[in-house]
Image (cartoon, rainbow, N blue to C red; front, side):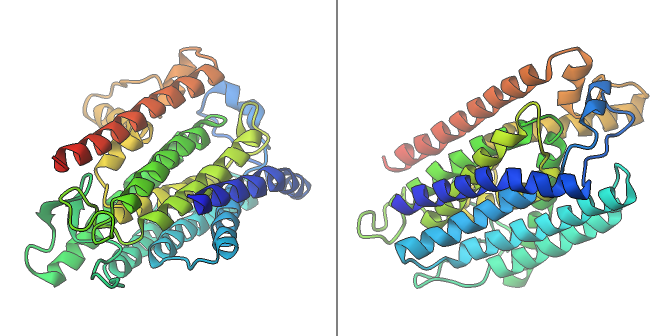
Length: 363
């Protein structure tokens, strides 16, 4: 428990104290955000606000996680190594996207094809590696079974290991595209994506901590039917805590009126971290409820595009969903706080289902 708190506190300090220094650096370099002309007119005042703040979220997470292990004299796990790969890989992709926007002085960065190819490459490498590295009990970081609260009976291998690797890689790619784009689409109002990320990863601190306490094969639990077969749940809780701390420190500067934006560097890296945590904690489908606000916002875009192509009519005044309410003259802060509340409700329901399933399984 101590290492979880240390990781969060250290990450918070790095992000909180490092962000204003980074803001001054970005301001000197004139690395500011470009605003779409077709967006809400209220956003035009945000033009030039420093972006790429995700660098501080990543930095805080890395320092908090690794320094907490140094202080507690423990060894980082392979599971979090894979999660770091996903976070840093997509974060680099986002950084390139942000950098191109700044250098080209436009609101579009990487071409969609280039971004998609990068996501596929990172997701595929992650998927293949996550099925390797069994521990002493033979448990690998991920499995080919689709998971809800734990692995379900639906195994993508269908009895053939090679098929399992291929189908799991496809499944991982789908999750990567969904979550990374979900966080990216949510990052449209000051503090919105950051606050929701705090809620989501905070929930995963509790989920992974509970899994660590009810781990299959441990002296305390043994082979109880309610135990969890997860490779490194405690270290995943440390990783999630570092992200929470880093996001809290960043939110201090990102809340309205934002002095810095996380940019695609932040949104894609947080999406990548969420992908990794849901897969490695064996809660892929439960993650839909934990991160319900990301799902709703992504769905609003899909609905808007689908209905418009079919009928040439719009369901929302503007998508993503947060901009629909802006067009209805809701104050930005009101939208952000209400979306945070919905995110809290979703995460609370997910935690309730998670714990309720354990009680049911425990008889």
